[in-house]
Image (cartoon, rainbow over all chains, first blue to last red; front, side, top):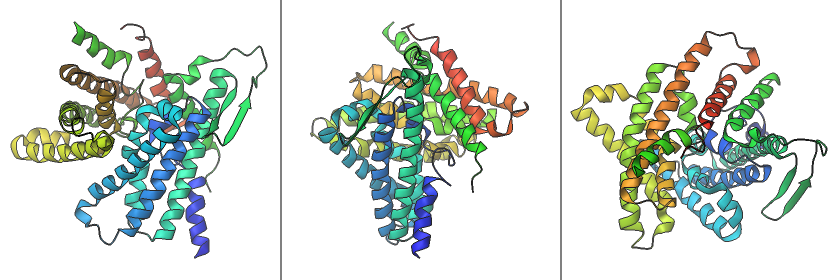
Length: 207
Length: 190
């Protein structure tokens, strides 16, 4: 039992990590990853919604009628998105402004609805918690990685913090003569760099 | 004149898919064949304009006067979901040909973030009624244009020889990057 819970958790971190293995929820992936800080912030906000909605959907799975389940899931998810919105406005306002429209957009993120439909509505609370946390944290590191790559190429340095708790500041990693490649932090660069990262992930066998 | 400017800005300069990154799941999911791309584009234009109008009215005449602005997210998603359901039933009954044409793309639109995103953007920018209507249409038309161009390119890529790790989504994303780069040239026009 303990082993299966652990495997539900770890599968989200590598084997089924969105958006690399499960190509879902691409809009925030492309939209907010202009820096590592924004990527991680967005990932954590999504993780919170995913975890809470997974738990609630799993608790209510015997009560929700099958025919209107999607509508019920969306309302549950929307409730937690509003919680995140209000919390971020109160405690992380600059991040809230940076992420902009993508915070309310968590409600239509296919990963969240996908996990509610494919996993939480069929499994128990403990397993669904592990699944939500795993997929959420997998999504967070993926966004952080993409953000870090784009920020490094686009500006030459890494700088930021997560909710004021962890700080990092890596100046000019490529040396002083490096000319920042603005393409990477702009719209076209998002597509190309995500495409190349997907290619790199395909080179590593998924086992 | 103002409206022409909005149309150009929303279709080319701030293209919803390529510059704002909204609605990318159907962009990659339904662009493998030209037929499905056209179906999706039509369905999005249809629903997005209606959703833009409905959510604008609900926000400005229901949520704002009653100080319920924090309920925006849940109200909008409910409006869009029920609108899609309603449109589906209406088309099935009265215009079966169009219904058959749009097929499964109609229900899929509920979770298309382009629709939800444009509704939220209209409110965030505090647009008036007519500008909001024109903006919704422009974004939807931009979505359709980008989707159809992309589908055309993807049909060609299918017969090209692509290195194995780059196949499928990876090469599709890089192609999207190139299209995005070409749309980038419109920047500074408006």
